[in-house]
Amino acid sequence: MFVNNGTGKEQSAGPFRRGSAHDFALQEGLWYNAPVARALGRAWIREFHRGRHQGGPTMDTSKASEASDDLFQGKLLRLAAAREEDAAHMARWSEDSGYMRGLDTDYARPRPEREFSPESYGQAAGPNSLEFRLRTLEDDRLVGFVALHTIEWNNRAAMLAIGIGEPDYRGKGYGTDALRLILRYAFDELNLERVGLDVIANNQAAIRAYERVGFRREGAMRRAVLRDGQAHDRLIMGILREEWSRGLA
Ligand SMILES: CC(C)(COP(=O)(O)OP(=O)(O)OC[C@H]1O[C@@H](n2cnc3c(N)ncnc32)[C@H](O)[C@@H]1OP(=O)(O)O)[C@@H](O)C(=O)NCCC(=O)NCCS
Image (cartoon, rainbow, N blue to C red):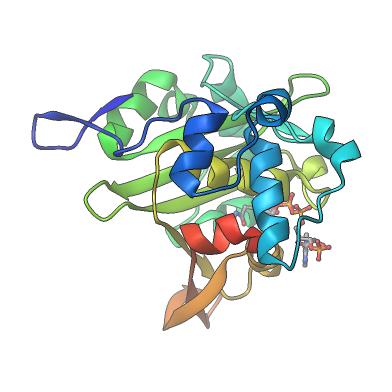
């Protein structure tokens, strides 16, 4: 994959290309047994590596077949491209003020469908953002989005944003699944070193989900968000590649 880095020149998204399980193992400096690795894939190698860091190869190989080798597919969700028909759903989500207030620190407002069309997203996003739509594996239903934005290719760093827009799908593990998918994408495919985010300190669901997949609290912008006459801190969180690949995620 090539990206435009904003200078008008195209460059590779990183020095490594995602190749065979063998390339992956070499890149990560991992134990590698070709026939086994070919059979079990990258996910198994990573789990083996995590086990080693935690005191020995602990992965239950009977579960290896459960670990998806598909970069786009989690346990409940998959990363999907935008479709025209998504816009109506996303506009409907924007009419939920609680959802919009959790999403970011901007003033909440219902947004028209046109702001969610694939074209307007593509234009606004530019080369330093990647957004995926989240669709259920069970019935291909659109339930949210996840994005890497403000990608700094020189620093191998990006910011993360996520929303499970369908209220019935919150609090059921979909957010965690999406976070694991996007972190794997950020570190395995884009070869980033860091993913960061900020979150309003009263957003307990989001903070819990981020900590669950390995994000650490790094600091806070004090009293940065004013809502209903109350000031809230804006927490800064981040996860590094090494933390993620050690299995802390
Ligand atoms: C934040 C969000 C992405 C989390 O996704 P989710 O699918 O609801 O979360 P999960 O079901 O995967 O749960 C993750 C953890 O958060 C906890 N959690 C979920 N909802 C919670 C709530 N309302 N209050 C406290 N904890 C909550 C879960 O118990 C779980 O922790 P556990 O594993 O220790 O039990 C989702 O709720 C959302 O989109 N919210 C609205 C938009 C938003 O706030 N986006 C984040 C902007 S920074």
